[in-house]
View 1 (spheres, helix red, strand yellow):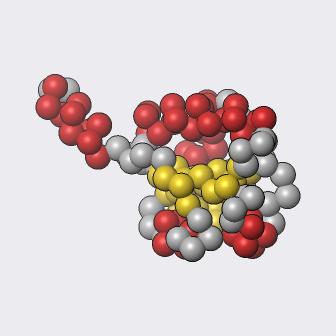
View 2 (tube, one colour):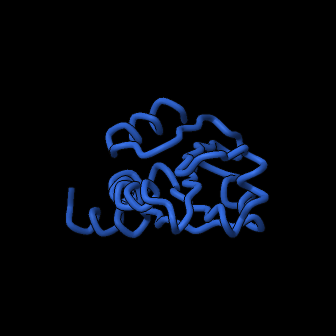
Length: 117
């Protein structure tokens, strides 16, 4: 791979986005989107955050990663019956494909994404 190809790939990589009740539907409408339902006070949520950053760095061009703070966006959390956090929901073109609850190591999350998209 040429050096310019590497820079281009970095440029098109998605960044982790923060979603709200107001823009949730719009953010999950197209492509593969992994949504992390979390809260600032949640220990396992803090543990999974750097894992999601690594996944974004590795496969961010294949999956968009979004984070939704359940304390500030209770309507969406209720709609998807999020009872424990972190809960990760995988959407493809707006359709819920899979759900996993609790901390997951990077390899398990990448497998979860690949098996369910």
